[in-house]
Image 1 (tube, rainbow, N blue to C red):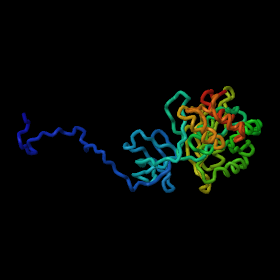
Image 2: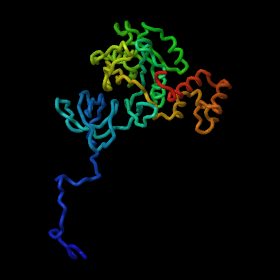
Image 3: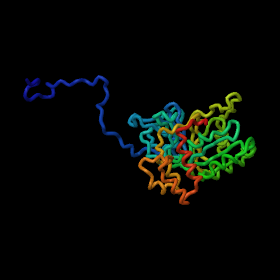
Length: 335
């Protein structure tokens, strides 16, 4: 039985009203070809501060981005009010493809990845030699994350006036990781900042480390006009107090590069890391894996790397360093 007859006209057809009063949904989205390019400097409670043509603009993520979020270091497309005036708000409509993504998890059993920074090309791992004591396993974990993300690692050892750096320098020498050693006097007179600044020229460098190691103090010395709050080490626990609560990208004087100060970390989980990718950071060992058994962990009895080293193709210390890094997921960071 036909409801409206053979040839109903428009007046005969019942149309369900749109109760919300809005336009019908469509899958066609605007291309925003006139959007301005911006760099995300910091993220705070859903508001993103972006640098656009020398101005800082507050923006929020557009609905069409869905669950995709922008993080510090992202290149984004922004539309709306780009004046940067007080109480104005722009929209981020697109996140450009990333050249690198530094990730971590809360622990090695946590499947949820947290993006620390995007588009960095260097990772400065800041560690105090004393007050608080260095944690080599945390350094190892940061190195693994850097190698996996394609970032060049840099080891920055602070407070050398309280303890010697020789042991750590010897431990990481075989990895070929460049290292800088500083003390409090050098931070005070600016010589430490000048020494570190030479390694940052033309690069975007993310600074990581646990609280109290002097990470933010060093960043303040590098960019003195944008000082951030710092704190002291807790005398009871021996741990630093969290004073930096959000990542912040800062330009070095003279447009010499960028530094990204990140909050202090208690742990650096590697649940997202595929151990097979870590070998790429060891070009002298990688050819020796051709004869390894399938899915070799490079730390087992039949691993071909043992014979590769025995034949004189690589330094045994390098293989030891590789296996130390690969085993970091099996050990607690405080060990």
